[in-house]
Structure formats: structure tokens, C-alpha cells
Amino acid sequence: MGDLFIWLISFFILIALLVLLVYQLMCLADLEFDYINPYDSSSRINKVVLPEFFLQGFLCLFYLLTGHWIMSVLCAPYLYYNVRLYTRKQHLVDVTEIFNLLHREKQQRLFKLAYLVVLLFFAIFWMIWSALEDMDD
Image 1 (cartoon, helix red, strand yellow):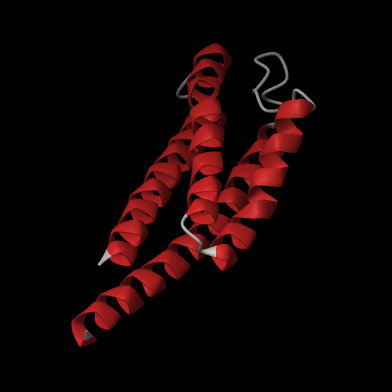
Image 2 (cartoon, helix red, strand yellow; image 1 turned 30 degrees about the vertical axis):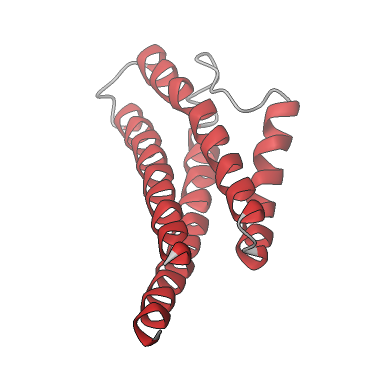
């Protein structure tokens, strides 16, 4: 029963991460179609970048502490990428360069989105596996 709760918690964390990334993509799409000005778009995206990084770091640590080594290893490249962005001061969107970097920013977030969807499918698989194992006991 404990494993099922662990997978439920990770499921909701992954859903929260997906929501944050979709929000960032929506802001970039609004900027691309000129529904929003660059300052508002940058400030909205920058408000959710650090919570996304902390939540993803917490998820990786959560998998590590609960003994789910495979999921922790699967989260590690994404965590490394976020740490690398943060240490190089490239994690925030610059309001003056946002139009020049719009395509790269969208591609970066789409890659993150695809990566998180794969992690979500793994988490759903293990959640169902845990529930079926608990039913057998």
C-alpha cells in the first residue's frame, strides 16, 4: 500500500510539472501570435521557472529516498540540465532577447514536455503495477 501512495504522489508532482510547462508554452505561443507583449510574457514565464526546477529536483530526490532507483536515474538528466541552466544563468527569459530566442525556448520546453510525458507513463505503469500487487496480497 505504501508504494501505491508513493506513485500517487509522484503522479501528482509530474502533473504539476506538466501544467507549469504547458503554461510556459502558452505564454510563448501568445507572444508568438502577438497576443501579449514581451515584458508580460517574460515575467509570467520567469515566475514559474524556479518552482519548476525545485519541483523537479524534489521529485528526483523523492525517488532516490523512496528507493525507486530506476526512476531516479531517469530523472537525473533532466535535473542535470536544469542545474546547468541555473548555474550558467540561462534559466530566465530575457525580455530584450525573447523574440530572437523564441524558437529555441519553445523547442526547449517541448523537449522537457516530451521527457516528462515519458516519465508520467512510467509512473502510471508502476502505479498500476503496485495496485495490482496490493490486490494480490
